[in-house]
Image 1 (cartoon, helix red, strand yellow):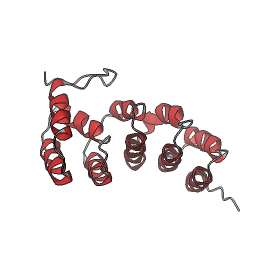
Image 2: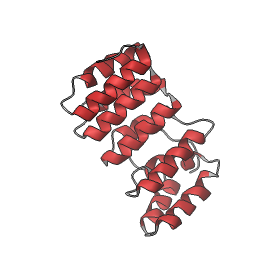
Image 3: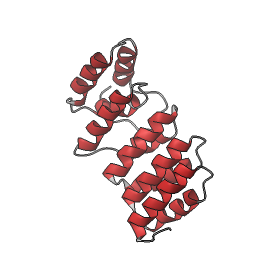
Length: 171
């Protein structure tokens, strides 16, 4: 019950699922944050899974807390990050991309490539920012695709990221 499970499993582990339900029954933000803080201190496989699942919390403050918590951990699983990129809601994908970028998880580049065409412009913008943090040839290729995006905010983020990773400046 407490063993490490593969992120490909679409159903959260029983312990994680129990906490997700408890969080869903806790209407106030402070209460949810206390639960997440307590669970985040527990060194168990379901703890990281719960944090990734909690990126779907509708409260931006909770998501920011979870992003900080995941970024502060000694190790995180790139597989859980990629799994979160393929699940709704859109703001959870954006938050997952923030973690990926700050942690510079190069292993997630194929997963980021899949969300470069996401329907939500904020997700595409977050992908550009994450790619700019990760850098490298593959990231620049994806950024060039985002540079051609229809949304001006996505294009601006892609230009800035290309500038950070390759030194190319757009006028």
